[in-house]
Image 1 (cartoon, rainbow, N blue to C red):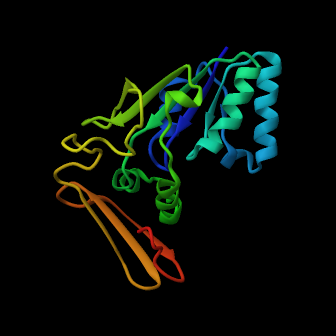
Image 2: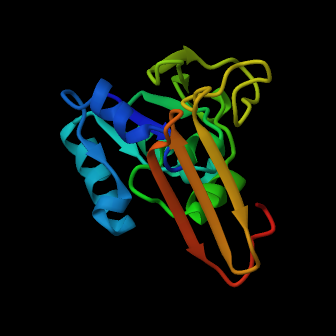
Length: 200
């Protein structure tokens, strides 16, 4: 039995990764779907009781977010495996197919504390996005991980023909992304705000 934690900002690819790698083997627990932390905790506790492996698909941005689940897993003798999605906000905005508010993406990035083996993970992996928009998984190194890929590494899925723009006024943030020379798959995200957040 095992507990898998997906760690990453919104629109970094966690849910598609689950469908591709773990859909057939691990029940998925997601707080956005359950609408309440108590329901999430109840499902996790049930998995521990019946010895059912599971996957937790949340942002899990901070060490405090992760520590409760890791401690409970060890108490239940479940190995803990983490997958950290090392994706920039630029790529997350480009991948955003369900129109997650930009405040959610950038706010999670600001809060993000990258995971480490010292938190108690039995195994820890880093997930990046490949040139053909596939998932690349590598064992995490010891020590502190970077939030985004190292300088010099290509940052996908935005290609040479894609265009991403982000601009704002005092009351509105507007982001547009177009794929290809003809501007296929154009989408725009707009957020009404009292002011532009300090962290943007």
